[in-house]
Image 1: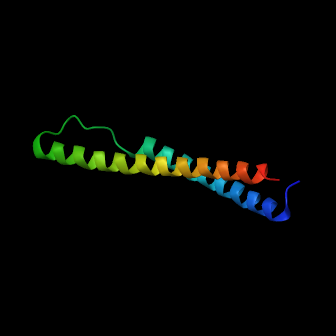
Image 2 (image 1 turned 120 degrees about the vertical axis):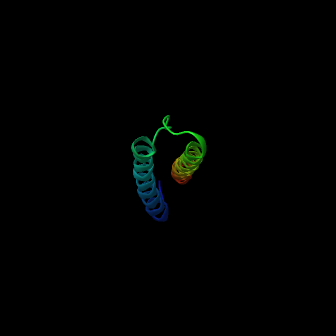
Image 3 (image 1 turned 180 degrees about the vertical axis):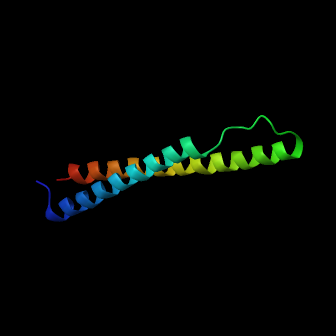
Length: 86
C-alpha cells in the first residue's frame, strides 16, 4: 500500500511529467515550424553568417529537446521508484 506522503509525491511527479510533456510538445512544434530551412539563394559572407546562425539555433533547440526528454524520463523513473517501494 502506498504511504500518504508517497501518494502526494507521486501526484506531484505526475503533474511534473504532464508539464514536461507539454513543454516537449511545444518545443517540437517550434523546432518544426519556426526553425527555417537552409537558404540556397545567398552566397559568400551572408550565406556563411546565415548558416552559422541557423546552426546555433538548431543546436540550441535540439539541446533543449534533449534536456526536456531526459527530465521527463527521469520523472517517469522517479514515479516508478516511489510506486515500487509501497
